[in-house]
Image 1 (cartoon, rainbow, N blue to C red):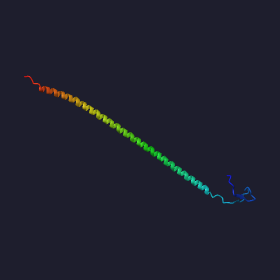
Image 2 (image 1 turned 120 degrees about the vertical axis):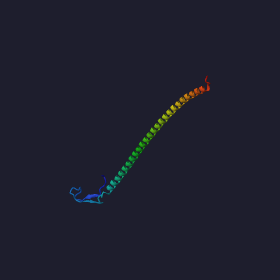
Image 3 (image 1 turned 90 degrees about the vertical axis):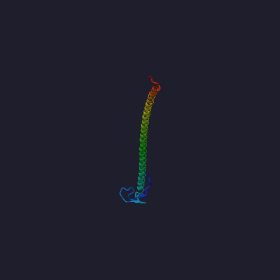
Image 4 (image 1 turned 60 degrees about the horizontal axis):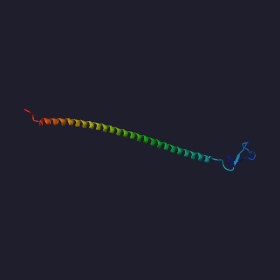
Length: 125
């Protein structure tokens, strides 16, 4: 629009109302510029879509990796908690055994001392 047109109508049909032949200095457009524009715009659109797809895939992959890492971290924490419980149970069992040994050891040492005292005393005839 607003470009100078290098075409003109026959002198008897200045406005083209009679449908006479149109005379042009240059050939009419064969749509080469338009095709180039459409092709280059399509290529840019395809490249933009590829970039968007790659970014989306990368974001999804990072999210999946983060979820897997979180799951692994929770699993490790659960294993650590389980190991702590096992250690606490073992410590409690060891403490009970130690208490039994100490308590049982005191009784046996008391009995041993009493038996020792009885054997050491002379019996009266």
